[in-house]
Every structure is written in C-alpha cells, then in structure tokens.
Image (tube, rainbow, N blue to C red; front, side):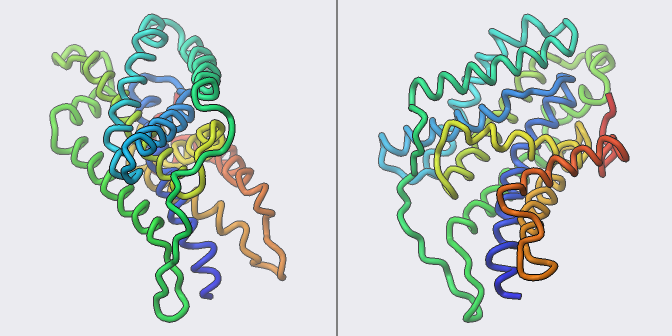
Length: 296
C-alpha cells in the first residue's frame, strides 16, 4: 500500500496538476477562439527555458522567477497572435489550426537554435523526501508544485467569477456575436485569453522542468495528454480541464501499477497511450466531455 502511495498516487497527483494547468489554456483557446492551438505545447517549452535563463542569470529559485517567466511568455504569445493568428482570425478554422501547427515547429526550432537541444537542469540538487508515518515519502518539490498549481487554478476561478474580464470571457465563449452586440470588447477578451493561457502554460512547463529536466521536446510530449484532459473535461469548460488533467495524470501513473501479477499493467514507456485511448473514447462516446462542453 505504501509503495502504491509513494510511487504511483503521489506522482499521479503531481503530473495531473501540471496537465490541468496546460489543459486550461487549451480549453480557453478552443472555447473562445474556436480552434485547436497545437503551438500550446511549445508555449510550455518556451516558458520553461525562459525561467531557466532567468534562474541562471539571477541565481534565484525557479519559482521566484516564475512570475517573470509567465509575463515574458505571455508577451511572446501576444506577438505570435499579432503576427500569425490575428490576420487569419476571420478565415476558416482549419487555416488557424494549420497555422498553429506551423508555429509549433517554428517555436521549437527557435528554442533549439537559442538554447540547444541538450537536456538542462534547474540545479536544485538531490532532494531528500520528507518521511511521514515512518513510511510515506513526500518530496518537497512535489508539495510545492501541487500547492502552486492549486493557487493558480484558484486564481483562474476568481478571474472567471469575480472580474469583468472573466465574465466577458465566459460570455464570448457562449456566443461571440451576442457578446459583441452587448458591447463587450471582443479583441480585449481575446488578448486576455492569450495572456491567461500563456501564463498557465509557462507555469506548467516550469513545474514539469523542475520535477524532471528542461528540454526542447518538453511541451511536445505534453501536447497529447493536455488535449486529452481538455476533451475529457469538456471543451470550453475550465473546471472540466482541471478535473480532466487530474484524471489523465492519475490514470497514466496508476496504469503502470502491477494490478494483476507482479508486472506493470501498462509498461511505463506506453503510458502516454492511455491518454490517447481516453481521448479517442471520449470523442466516440461522449464528445461533450464530463462537464458537457461544446461540440464543434
């Protein structure tokens, strides 16, 4: 039982909290701008490398430079929107999807050109886990990641429910034309969506890089699970994205537990396939997701 908690359940919660942050940005973009942004994973990579550079330059803890990394990533994404998405916004959805795919390749190549393709580390050293109840091992970095993710998700909740910008985002997600007729500045809502999504994506990238390492393929590896989380929760439903991220993270880790016999139920190298299987099943049997999101 202790082995199950230490090596499967706790890592699943950590991974699920990271997926949840990434999925919120995907579902907001899909719900408000009506297209699947394949460059979202590279936004995570960009945020992780910006935080790595800031931490290396200042000597600060990665979480201390996280707000700056989120801000710089948001500025970069606003520039991408200005150059690539805004001119195509009134065209066909498939054009935006193809543009996002091309931007994904461009950002990844730019990251490799600037920072290289080798693995990097935030240099936190070997962490000694806290030992609880003489058996339960909890790493301080995992507690920090989960608590920080909860704070960010709470901030999203307050933004959507307590601010005019959040209410405008919800109105535009329901009906852009009606929102425009009621006097809502839709361009400002779009900019807010990009800023929120980019900031959360940067945080997710930093959290995963802090837990593992910084690499140019970091965001690409997260792309499938966060899309699966967004679909599972329901497109356009931020709370669904949070729940979907936690479910996908937990299912991925728990699928490698030896439920039958002594061998892993699913080999660790194939656990991402579990996310793909869940995504396909949701698209077939419940395309609106658990929280009854939009079906386009």
